[in-house]
Amino acid sequence: MSRDWSWLLDELRVTRLRLELAPRRRFRLPSLPGSMLRGALGHALAELGDAHDVLYRGEALHRGRRVNVPGPYLPEWRGRVGGWKEAGERYHLDLVLLGQARRFAADIAVAAGRAAPRGLGEDRVPHDLITRRLIERPGGTPLRQLLPSLPPEAARRLCLRTLTPVRLAKGHQEAERPTFERLFARSEQRLRGLVRFHVGVEPPAPDVELAERSRAVRVQPDWRFAAVTRQATRHGRLKVGGFLGRLELAGELTPFLPLLQAVTVLHLGAKSTLGHGRVAIAA
Image 1 (tube, rainbow, N blue to C red):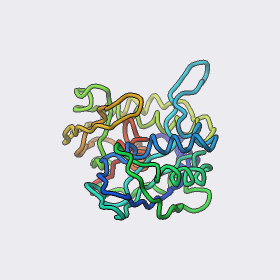
Image 2: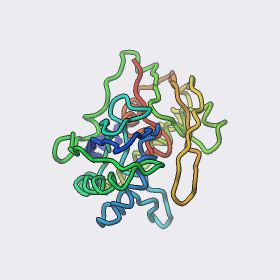
Image 3: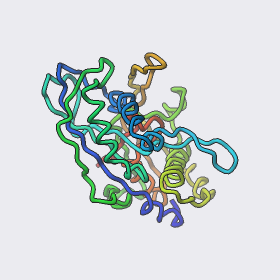
Image 4: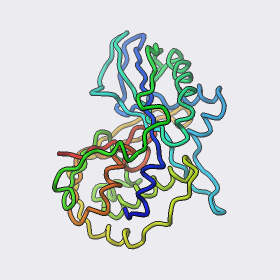
């Protein structure tokens, strides 16, 4: 990212809302946290007013045309979570709130309290919401302060490790052999959209020179496709799989490092509001 982009990392502020939940009967946790919570939380938020429109706003009119609006929240499991939970066994779910979504943290906490006893997951298993608390300081934390540290060789070589399935394209072939040009474009577009629609600041025009330089970065994927499905109320069972493994990046990475650090917070690729695309920088 060019220097012109640096201030965006300060403009986008982040708040983490942590929910502690316990099922009232045996319950299997899905691999994607958003597939457990999304519909139930959405219905509860619709009862509270503006929060629903901000979190679930899919499109907006920008400069005379309809464009997609990135979701300003990211669901993440806290710690190693998976498999079955027995009745009363507690687990944690974080909702990472971005930009103006932070203003609705209290409403989201109330909605989670309403949604939990009504039932979560495909089988609508009733839950108890044990605790709900904000992890970040009041007002949120600038994205820049949440960026992970980098290994010494990061200027020339970097490895991204996937924590949840990554979706980069509708077809499998393109995603199996992703180019850095596409990774950079998708990630830059997401950051620009978050700042534009959820901070209210118009970002600078894309850096054409930097986009050209992204073509020279080499990508070596070492990942496999993981088939995942979810049950949707309106559309039935949907395929929401993605790729799990590692992405080795090599080349002149220095101008791209802030964006690569940012995707560890903002996720990589599509369907991030379901929990897709959570990645970490591997040691």
